[in-house]
Length: 113
Length: 110
Image 1: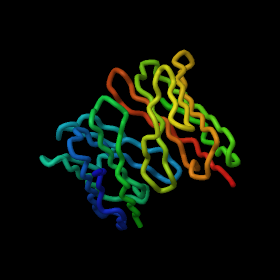
Image 2: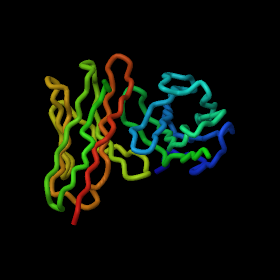
Image 3: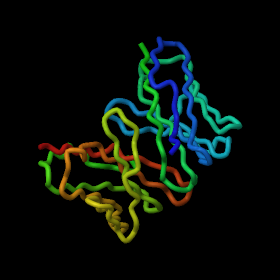
């Protein structure tokens, strides 16, 4: 069965650079979530989209932005990268925005040097 | 105070043992409850939903106590492969926002 696809899996950037992460949700899933997980931390909610519209916003820095495109894939853009942005970034999708049944991608590991 | 709190553990248990741990939530309007499993450096995966009447899936039993605002997970006959971090997830009934607990680490030793 198709799962949530994230790319790239690993990314190394310098401080102040820009990074873009991509997420392809499971077909027919209408909600996409982005989470950031630092070492030893629980996943922190960044932002979500429902039917290509932003549905909720969490602790996403102003330096980050995201959108969902007409084909339902989503991109997380991160600018002016800081050392503290180094983390595992998960994208998740769900069939129904009203449940907690999320299907996570394998994550994109960002390292900022 | 975090909306969802878990004992971080670690719970170190021998194979075949039973291990149980709780997750407390602060918002009485919480509606749905889930246990996710996360292996080291991997993505969280849904382990089981938690229903009001409690539910069992093989060696795993989940319970919900609304009066005391906690859910529990019990693992019987622990296997080495059960070693993981177990994340509690709670959704609110008013805005369906999800809250993750910080996770409980379980290590099963041979």
